[in-house]
Image 1: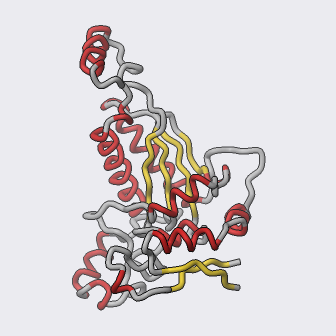
Image 2: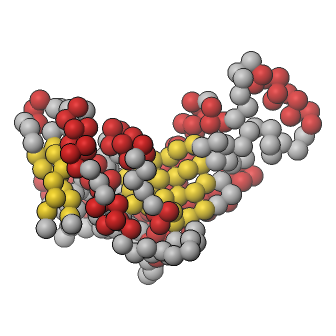
Length: 260
């Protein structure tokens, strides 16, 4: 079974909703951070647990990463190509890795009025880690060539605006060496430990390894048995009527349909 979005209403009444990402959509460039999904659909998937352990591709001391390929129903609701979400789970506190008693006591005093010593409880730290992950991710994604490397055969002048811009992007993101090619899709990073300055290099390297694991199709998180058909299994148990109700309520001018 294949799922796709069908235009359902006049787009002029829904200026906030952009057209869905398709095979011809250009990937983000180095001036734009990749975005996530249409929010109501993401919440629906989380509430109904529409995922599988087979989507876990990488684990490190700081984060775990899920990957959803383009044929997964979530990818129909991406805002960019590729798409990425960064979620902070129960993160280690500021004090956990602090070896200095003096600094530890200072941190306790500073954050006692905040009633939390966990970075994920503060918007400024969530923003910092989100930008760090997305910036490093897209750099590594382009380093491995992307799922559809930008080139004149892939897009036309009308979509890019000018041939000069097209050639500039093609040259900038040309794959430098042979090897696995980064995949399009939806990536989710669950960060549970904020990296210190001394750990930042390792943190960035692990993001690169996570992108490469997907490119090679070799999950670094092992389970008893990897189900190659897990995407079809999730798509098949999707309640399409419920999804379409959510799309209608959120003023999205599309509906989800099944095709052969």
